[in-house]
Image 1: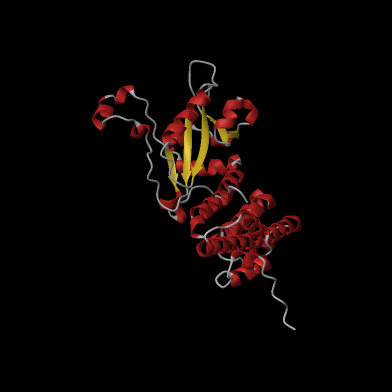
Image 2: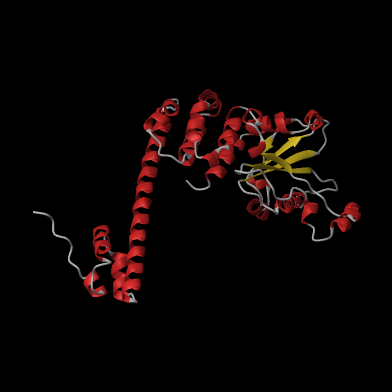
Length: 323
């Protein structure tokens, strides 16, 4: 599973209803009174230029203002697991790229919502003015003439669980992301199983299977069948079997990675031992080392400190099986 946070975040909040529920908890009340979140719609990629599609976040939405007219709100969502010191500049560039697509004299409001889910609170700049390379007194004096932007920000590391924004699946996704660094995502999912079950009914088995895989993948301790039983039982058979097959592949890949790490470690120990005892590692011995079977490496590990020469080490016969 690559980029698990990206996958869960985009799968969850690409649904306008999930995003609207989060925005209702985050937007100031005067803005909520003017913004029609029931009219929130995702913008299809083809509505943007190739450059805009390639260089802006994947989730784009628009919502109309209640007074009418052509004013609208475009929301660009980012999530960062570690502080990005350039984020205010990135937010400004995102706004500029949206404005470059506009025909007419008036510009739409553009907000970049940053959802941070790092282990520690966000410490990077939140205002564009913090990035200017000038004495603070000069920046203060030039303030009316300099572009400014303050990030619209939700830092999950400082938001208590019961105050996370959103409802249903969105709240559960943010909850898992908030605690992902702790390595106990599966117990957390089981702790909030009623919320998971309710979100499953609203979002369907595909979303629920993705959330379960996320919780299993980010759980740092070995996962037992009992830990997945309750959540797995809520899925319909096709998705349940798909998750079980994925778990089997993950276990096998994990075993293969563990074996590979073990082989590399043995090769490293033997290589260092040869260089320490004999001063050089000949090309044919390096080749034999890289191609050796696990049993052969284990045999060399046994002999590395007793073989009289490198030739004797690499030409040693395999151990005979006991009669």
